[in-house]
Length: 385
Image 1 (tube, rainbow, N blue to C red):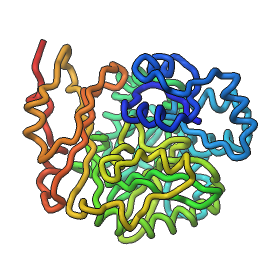
Image 2 (image 1 turned 120 degrees about the vertical axis):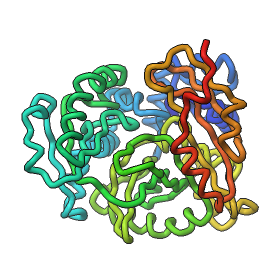
Image 3 (image 1 turned 30 degrees about the vertical axis):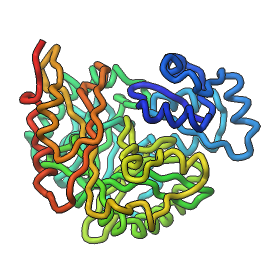
């Protein structure tokens, strides 16, 4: 069972849903999708709820967190609501996990108290972010007093405006969380819990240009990375789930790893990596990543990288440059920035401030490509109308 919602639905996902005939909740987005994918198994809300309630172990997936409010208020599944609430409230999540990560500082601050908070009493660096969040909206790395002042100015000027474009279940602007800056390499993991056993589908590294960078520009994966971390992450998530108690639910998890120490940044319920990042998996295996969750299976870890052992697969977000209007991405110019583009997905949604998603492939030995993508000047790739 799946709920399609803003801000983005991929054609690849719609193709998979047509083929699999997974029940799709009837709403504005799914009805619009039927214009191009007439065989979608769209059912009305009453039938969707009945199907959910009469299935012994229903598998529910939401394309984005826009749908969480509907899930929590309409389905009336107390256990599911508890799981969603625990994961989306960063303060509640940190409190539950505190017995495992005892040295991790976190503090909840209301919006009104932010401007009176004495940051000089806190050991830096820290990260300031909304207690409920989406993408990197309102995430600030604080290394000194100037960073703190700039963050408060940006919250007043830009973040509250941005938060108004998302439902409260996606970006909550009432409270912020201040927590220790988690050092190390950042990874994103797509998995689902089969009963309480974690089944990992995707492992991506999320590289940055610097410690201050909090953008979502690039995610990468390859056989070496996947093989090196699969067992480590599975074992750690199994231990973590002894306190989280998650079961029969898909999640997207963001973590950092330093010297073998793993610390979760956040876990997002009822979905894999947002927008369409999770679909890198399709270019590796030819299978849609949701197929494992809906069938209760796992990838064939031994064969999934066959004939792709030397390749690194990347997902890039090409953002709209600030202040630019009526611009169009020059695809030919874009192609020159990548070794091999697998697909460019143009985005037409002003809420996202994104021009396109790029799926690409390069030799794993080509380390310079990662740096080039991270430092890509998008203004040089635009045609102006």
